[in-house]
Image (cartoon, rainbow, N blue to C red; front, side, top):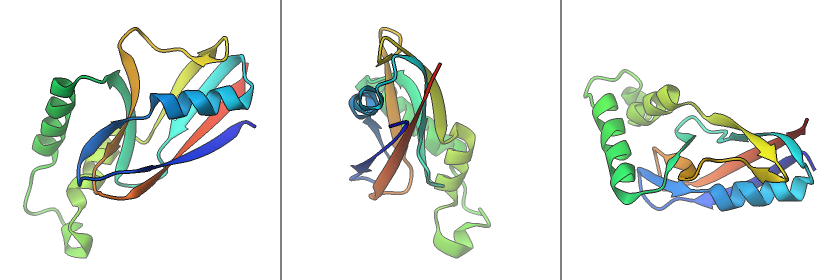
Length: 133
């Protein structure tokens, strides 16, 4: 099974959720021992990234996103008032690729796979595509 999907229900307009366990489970279910795992949030106002899951860093990341996208004259806001979420997702990107070794996603000591909700709360889908090497 090279393609796995799971859903995450977010509870705030902006929040960061650790999805490392779900991604690792998807990789394990694929049966891949060596290769790559591509993790994608197929949404325009949601993203994924790798970093430490530490409360201060999470708060700092959300504050930085807010500062980068603060504005009152975004043209997209005429449509649905969430231009800041679209712009933050465009800057951060919606996918990451990680090595798989020994059937496990290879991460550094403190690294975790994080989903960033930018326009919630919503039900978000995450796709994990595993390619054997």
